[in-house]
Image (cartoon, rainbow, N blue to C red; front, side, top):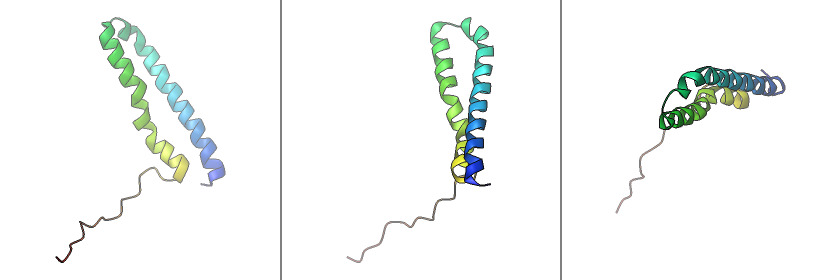
Length: 83
């Protein structure tokens, strides 16, 4: 898919995914409100950060056209020196 199509489509999909995720958290807010304040803080902290790794493949696709990371090049061990 061409960049001219993939990037705007990716942005739209990311916005829709974040909106859907926010709606799910909002639906759960009634249940979360009944918890102690420290538990609410932990849940909202996790919920506020959890969408980032979940959307990384979509972000990667928007930028590169691939959902997966390219495999790292084989690395060699430390160079042996003749001493």
